[in-house]
Image 1 (cartoon, protein in one colour):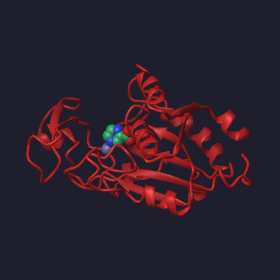
Image 2 (cartoon, helix red, strand yellow):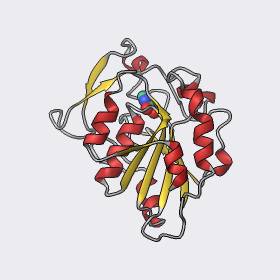
Image 3 (cartoon, helix red, strand yellow):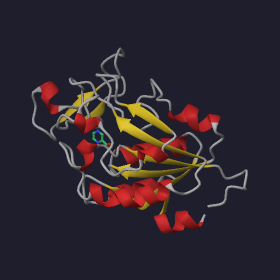
Image 4 (cartoon, protein in one colour):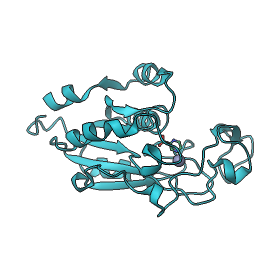
Length: 218
Ligand code: VGL
Ligand code: ZN
């Protein structure tokens, strides 16, 4: 990876490599198998290296328990404070996961957290699901991610982590929409579902799919 080209300022964004998503209540199949690959990418000369953490209050809107409904059932959610017919969205209800400052919220054991320059929290508002590490689905509030990337003059965003079909995908799509050249590193991502449709969807919307060996040659 070249650090001398001023038109190429790459950032590595590690999505949600937390205990609950790897071994805990919402374990993504194969999640532990990408830790070494992510650590090897964290050794590359990215201009900055960031990680997101899902940071939920105990009564978060995305938890089945909050609604007394079965896990993986669906509800319709609305932007808070807006009329009820304003941009409804379908919300999958999850097991309780990544409750702030519980063991499930911690970075997974083995992740090279020393290599990280920044940690970005998301999903902090009890009433709003935030899959994207940039912002909620209605674009009512930004996390710190876009501001950090802009302040470092980042041109290219490389996304890794979990889950490929939720937070990785929505972060990558937002990165494209915000004007970054956006890459998802396929062998450093695992998904909840094995259907694989997220890869075609991301490609169709301008995300570049790459792999860790290619990234190391950049
Ligand atoms: C995620 C489901 C619920 C993710 C977060 O990190 O992909 N998935 N909250
Ligand atoms: Zn969550």
